[in-house]
Structure formats: C-alpha cells, structure tokens
Image (cartoon, rainbow, N blue to C red):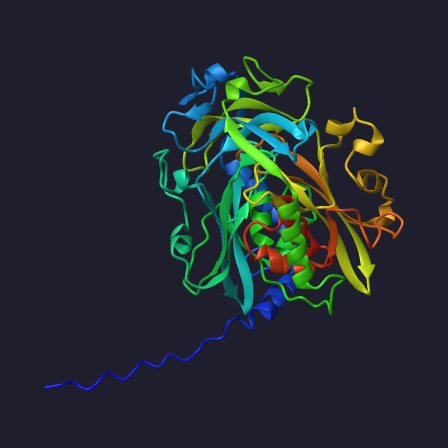
Length: 462
C-alpha cells in the first residue's frame, strides 16, 4: 500500500532584524540612573570591591616565573602546558623595500576567547551585567569588564581554577544582540581574535558581589572617566547595533567596501613567526627583553595575587610599552553629517593585512628621533588641538591581561578643511559613525583602538 506523500511543513519567514532593538538601546542610553546602582555611587561600589580582595602585582626576573620558561632552542617564552600564550618573534615587511622590514617579539595566542556582556530588562529598561575585574597590567588594577572575559584555556580550566561565572549564557547563546569575531592589538598579537558577544536573557540572574547591572547611560558616563571601563568591555560595547540617524555619507557603503578591498589588495605585507632568541635589534636581559634603542616596548615578568580571580596567584610575562599612546579621530561635519577620518592601517599581527584604525594611533615618543615628514600624519594636529576643538578626551587602558601600564589618551578632535581635507591623503577616508557601526558587525574591519573610539562616540553626548 502506497502511503500518501507527507504535506510539507510550512515555516513562515521571520524578520531579518529586530525592529524594536534600536529604540530599546536608545532608551537605555538615555537612562543615567539604573535600577540597582546610582551612577554617583559607582566609585564607592568599585572601591568596595577593591577593598574586598587582596590585589598585588610585583615585577620579577624571568627566573622567578613559575611554569613559564624560555625554549632552549628557539628562545620562545611559553607555558609548560603549551596553552595560554607564547612570546615568539615576528618578522614583517611591507612591500619590497627592505626599509619597511622589521622584527619584534609578539604574542601568539591562537585560542579564540569569549568577551560577553549579558543584558536584561529591569523596569522596561535594558541593563548590562558588568564585572569589577582585576587585571595585572592595569595601572589601577580593578576596572569594569564584560560579564565574561576569558580565554579558552581559562574557561576550560587548564589552570585548574574556579569556573567562570555566567559562562553558560555565552557557550550556546540564544537571544543574541551582537556576535562577531574581532581582532586584538595587531602590533603586539599575532592574528589574535576574540568572540564579542552581547546576549539578552529573561531568566532570573543574581549579580554576584563583583558584578553590577548598569544601563547604557551609566556605562557611557563611566566611559568619560579615566581608567574605569576596560578594553574588553569597550570592544564589546562597540558592537551594539545603534540606529544610524544620519541621512547619508560622503562615501556610499559600496564605495567604502571597494576602498577597503582595494587597500588590502594594494598592500603587499609579508609576515612570519621566527624564533624569539634570534630577533634582530632586541636584547634579552635578566628582567626584560628590550629594543636596542630603548623604544617601543619591553617584555617583562610579574607575580600576581588576586583574590577575586579563578586562580588567586600566578606569574606571567607582560608587554610594557614605552610611553603614553595617542589615539584620535579627527572629525568634521560634511554635508551636515558628522564624519570621522579613518586610516587603512597595516599591522604585523592582522589576519587580513589591513583594518580601519583611528586617524592617529601611536606612542609619540617612538617617533621623536625622526624628522617631521616621517612622523605619523595628523599627529601634530591632534597634539596642538585647542581645548574648544576637543569633543572627547579620556585615558583608557589597553588589554590589562597581557600589557603592563599600557594606556592611551583617546580623543575626538574637531578639524578644519585645512587641517584635514575632504579629499584626504591615500589610505584615509571619511566615514560616519553609522558606517563604522555597520562595519564592526563583521569580522576584521575595525581595529581595537577604533572600536574603543566608536564606543566613546556614543558616550559623548549622553
């Protein structure tokens, strides 16, 4: 007997986007007093978390490292498990000119970590669960971080420490607000990426003592303060799909994508990992690896005690830059719309050769020995900006888990046509905040410093 064919299951199409989300984000950004903590009480809360735990960071010689050692053949500095990360050498060259070649230490960390923020409505307003997290490289140690900030080695508990709180919301996320792979510092990491996640929940979630629910308005207020919101939180916040209120842009989106593709095709970049022990112009000493001319950064070692971490004591290497960085967008209103000048940057650790960075991104002291024409474009415009031209300014720490005292002065500076022309030099383009927000939803388009500034753009007027 022939059975009748089964009727096809009709699945109605679903909306491609969440039409309500932009309005909910805008409302959260407008609310500057949360349901759980007043903004004015935040410094006291953070200080209380600092007092509740023992935090110590001590510089030590490399011989004092526990479970870390230099490979006798390559000179690479790695962990005995082969996990976490390894300090290796990088050889890079841009184009065929030997003058553009260099070598340096670099962090190889092939694991994809999770940077996740949990969102939940309270009183009809989205709040975000943020953590007071100690990182050994932060000058003030304790800063506001995502709900989850963990490498795969950490959340799989290679260190045999305590489990990562709230991890279950991000391993198999459901109500996803944003989810994208993003690079880290291309000058210090080799092809490192993290999964940046924002997930919403309706479940009852109790905030542990080191965690707090804040509105976007509260977080934006904290972004205007020095050394409060850490790098990992800033990069995740930059992925929020804020609505684009601008009526247009100097360059249509298709032109922007074509320009980025052209820049990637134009740049001939060659990189290779090499033994750390043979890296040219770098000197290994008992307590640091330094550049022969005392520039750029050092590789150092520290011993850490942190009562609030999954493991309460450990040792590790860190990269310590030489000097305060300057990271800035120049901005102009073009056709009545705010635009920001981005650079198609080449960094040795990028996966895709080029990512869009700020107008200026450097440590000025590294270029002080060069003539003016060889220093970064637009650096002098930023450094000489009058106070009335500075629309945003704060000092923010870079990745405190890998970098020691790495801080940059982040700025948004109003420029004139003479200072930053509408038709900028090769490698630069004017983009709107909406275009940056659109690009950051995809992997490896916007570098980590520009993502910090993008998060700060939305904090400027709140």
